[in-house]
Image 1 (cartoon, one colour):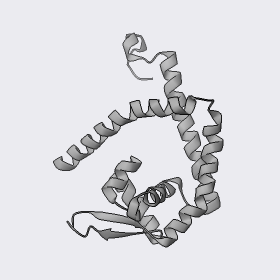
Image 2 (cartoon, helix red, strand yellow):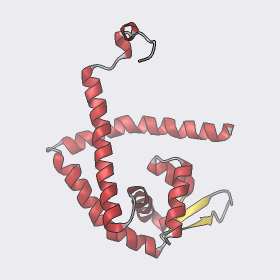
Image 3 (cartoon, one colour):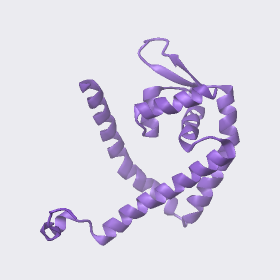
Amino acid sequence: MSDVQISTLSHKQLLSNEERDAWVGLIQAYAGIVRSLDDELRLLHGLPLTSFEVLAQLVLTPGHRLRMAELADLLVYTRSGVTRIVERLERDGYVKRCDAEHDGRGIYAVLTGRGFEAFEEACATHVDGLRRLFFTKLEAGELERLTDLWERLGSHSCLEREQRLRSVERDA
C-alpha cells in the first residue's frame, strides 16, 4: 500500500455505496453484453462487433458512405481506431475508401456489395443477441426510461467530447 493515509480522505472524495454500485453495475453490464455480442459475431461470422458497428452505420446512412471523421463521431471511437477498423474492412472487401470529391480534405468510407452481404448475414445474430442479453431483461416502461436517461446523460457528454477532440486537433 502507498504512503497515503486512507483516513485522510474526506467523505466528499468517496462514492457512496449506492453510487459505486450503480457505476460498477453499468460498467460490468456493458462490458458483459459487448463481450458476448463480440464473441457471437466473431464465432458465427468472423466479424468483430466494432466492424459490425461500422458496417451498420454505413448501411443506415443514405448513399452508404461517411467521412471517416463522421464515422468516428457517430461510433464514439477515436479517429485512429476507426482508421484501423476500416483498413481491416477494406482488406476484406467490405468497404472502400475514397477521397472527398468536392473539397479533397476528407476521406470517405464507402460500403461495398460484399460489405452489405456481410452485414445482412450477421444482422440477425446481433439483433437476437441484443434482445436476449438486454431488451428482454427490461420490464414495461424501462426501455423508454432508459432511453430518456441515456439522452440526458449522453447528449452533453458527446458535445463536450466533440469540442475537446476538435480543440486537440487544432492544437496539434
